[in-house]
Image (cartoon, rainbow, N blue to C red; front, side, top):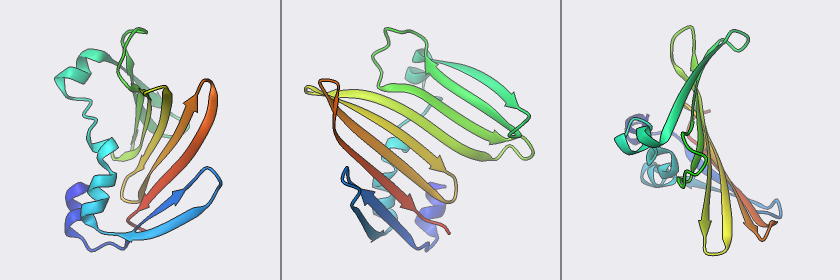
Length: 148
């Protein structure tokens, strides 16, 4: 999909929403798209380091007609920022339907919670919540669209 975005002249744009609900949209190009997609592209569940940390479970959901591959830390004491990865495949054609990633990490005295969604051939979104001493101090959302 990265190659497709880099070689096809899609009309691409990003929409940023801050914690006050204010939105700002901007046209982007392939290079910026690739930079913005890094939170997804940096996670390779097949890498040896992540395979050691994550356990996989598979569920065939007859209602949604998809296979769910869920990856969660093997240990409750795990220090990885990745808390879960959910990959949905269409059971008719084995094509990717969605990727959901939940991450929690710390920066100084702030906890950052990320909810990432990848909708193949359409868009991805990154929702971030910043928590300081159990109080939300900031929220923002980024949506990057490359197909309509």
